Each structure stands twice: as C-alpha cells, then as structure tokens.
Image (cartoon, rainbow, N blue to C red; front, side, top):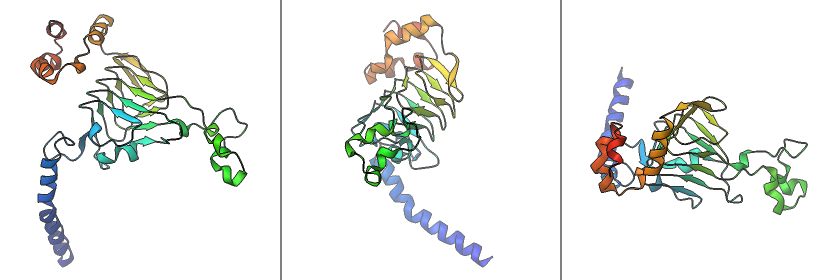
Length: 235
C-alpha cells in the first residue's frame, strides 16, 4: 500500500512539474500543432528537414504511439541520399498513425542470382563503392496528391503515385499507382470503389479547391464539408 501511495505521489509531482512547460510549448508552436493540447497531431511540413521530402500546406500526421515530430525517422524508411529519390505529398492530406513509406533501398535487386545485397558491403567483398546502388532496383519517387487520406499502418512502396482525393485503407500495402478519388485496400492494395461518379471526379480535378486562397476556402467550407459541388462550381 505504501509503495502504491509513493508511486502515485511521484507521478502527480511530475505531472505538475511538466504540465506548464507542455502547455507553453503548445502555445508557442501553433505552426506545428493544429489543435490545442494535442501533441499527437502535427502539420507535417513544419517538422520536415530532409530536402528530399516536400509536403504541402495543412497536411497532417497523427501518431498515438510515437512522437509525430519524428515522422522522418519512424515513417520514411530506407530513404538514403545516395538514391536522390523523393517523397512528395500534396496539400490537405490526412496521414494516420503508423503509415510507412518504403523507398528504393528496401528493394533488393532481382537482376542478381542472389538476394544478398553484396554491393552495400563493398569493403568486405572488395567491390567498387561507386556501384553501391546496384544492390537495389530504383523505382523512383513516391508522390502523393492533394486531399489524400492514408489509413492506419498503411504502407506505400517506392515509385507509387497516389492521385488527388484517394483513400488508402488501414494496413493496405500499395504497390501500384492509385487513380484520383479511388479507395483501395488489401495486400497488395486493390481498388474497392470510386468515391464519386466520373463526372464529379472530373469536376473536382478541374476545380482543385486545395489551391484556392485560405480566405476563399473558409468561405465555402460548409459546401465542401456537405458535398455541395454545385455551389463550389459557382466560385
């Protein structure tokens, strides 16, 4: 009983000690945290330092397991400068906890008779360091459009392009391009259905509301939220 009481008092002490600094940090970093008292959600472009990662405005990442500020370290994997491959994410995307982006260095080349990445260990095998990239197959950049929702623990593989307005289901493994406004799921990811009819998709792609000034978006936000494309088309 005494040990339990002590543990509770110690916990209470640290909560009081760190509560104020945390609140001050949230207040000072409104450009990072879009919601008050929520350290699990960040504006992604505010925490990116890698020049090979580009993220549009208002794209958010939520992580209730790890610190979302560590997105580059925990979610962008096998992304080595030697390849020059890029992660490009558009505006107003929603990326759920644990989503991963696997880059080219994860792809052991299929041109070899062995799966072992010998060129990486050039010193051990006395190989030319300049041929290190021959250890894997380079499929290019990962490109995510605007207004894309990537679900919990989904995986997007190297070279994949995901179109505007698409939805990636939880734990899907995306190995091929996803057309705009398409819902995919499964391993490997397959099309489940389109979000809208072809006419609506074409109008939304023409509209590109995510590129509008913030003031204009704010003005028509109720129409966006309630699916009133007819009103949006008048602006």
